[in-house]
Image (cartoon, rainbow, N blue to C red):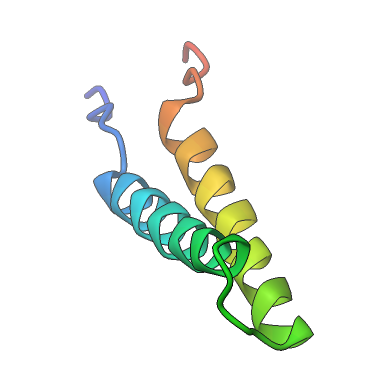
Length: 64
């Protein structure tokens, strides 16, 4: 039997959500919102996690 080769759409959802939230926080900070350093670091972390989740979703699967 062959294993079903499917993409994990949860990674796609998380990637878009994290990028959207982190991007929104950075956008509001650039436009004048006063955030603490911790909140900026968390927003950058969300962007990095979102990028990693999208990478996991779109990377080419090895041929098995």
